Length: 325
View 1 (cartoon, rainbow, N blue to C red):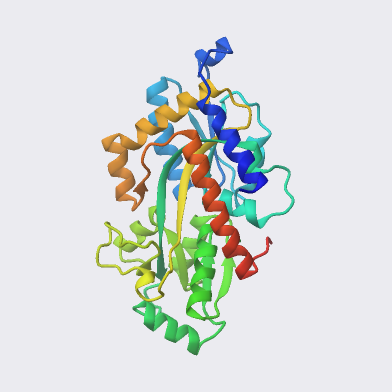
View 2: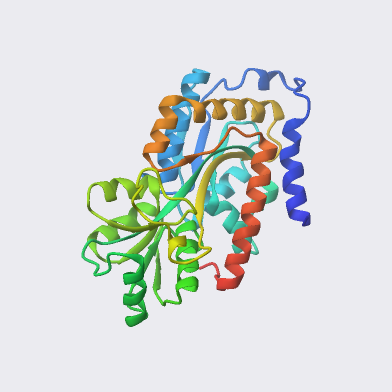
């Protein structure tokens, strides 16, 4: 176990300590509106989920949870803001796979995600869909690979940002399929999908919350899903692993807080977020978005998941030679 992984798991382990009230104000939490900071653009899957969870928390606590989007720098702007915010439970971060990827991608930041953000709870795992503009000539993964090999460097692959889950999933596909595509990073999912719909780029590996509505409307053509299992929302859509043995990629979303946030508050948020993901209405909404709802977890269990995810993406980033831009 590496030092950073050990420190990260120890950080989350503090949430398992006895919840003896150390601060009177922690018991009254929240007595004014907390903020959930989202590092992706408005309308992105992260924004959608933050609003679902925020509404549930607002109802449970009878206190408004404000959603604030701070896109840019692959989520680092938002993470930096939360890492340096007061550790009082009133500034919360919607964490996702981008955070664990960035921990491997960037050598120097003004924060260390694995050190400065305390895991609170996981929400769900997000499949990605390989999708193309309807005018693109390929109608299947084998046809796409054949076209890409016949036209090296002529296919533009959109992503929500350099080093993000969409980018990494695409790079893994490029490596395993042996094709050359031009990566076009955007500042968030929304502008990337907008250009894909307009035909400015030809392919994207997009998360299901934003891809499914476009696919259902017939505005984008899905070729495959990136998870090892087929997607319930698109049961006839094959997995990439059916064509590229061993291929698997997915994103995820959860909640974190600044290091040093009282364990009583982390435990309270963990309990209420876990109640959200088992709520029938929210669970149905997440399933409609194509998400795989995570089982309720403790902060320590969520920390272990993040540490394993960071280790996986580190291998992909190093093998693909991906550098921050």
